[in-house]
Length: 132
Image (cartoon, rainbow, N blue to C red; front, side):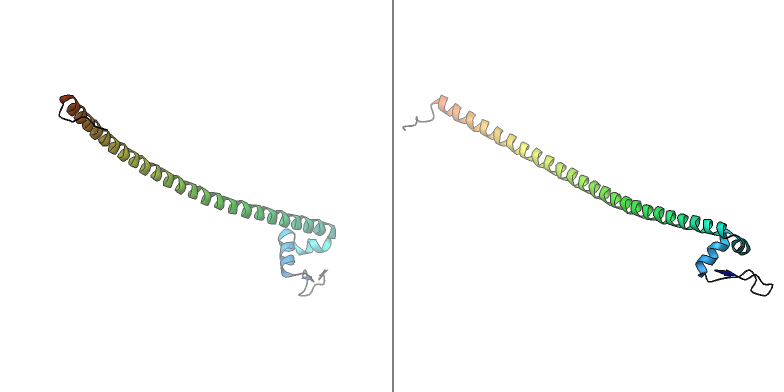
């Protein structure tokens, strides 16, 4: 890294750095200060790199948590859909049970009527005894 120090048009220009690094250095310290104190610029560069790494780590963590949240949200929506389907199935089974129960009651009533008719016929003597 070289800094122009003559009084010409290139004064206070930094040479040998990429645009990104030069912009970062200019945003943290003026170019003349960077040129006059290498220990400050070195510690600031290390601090900047550390902050960049920390920002990258936080961004990665955020992306991971965001993806996890999206998965949990989708899982929750699926569970809600499954729950609704189960409730609908239970309601259908309950309706079928009630229908079967009504049929059973009708059959039971018909059996009781038939049994009563047979008993009345047997007691009245209108039925011949079973020869077998």
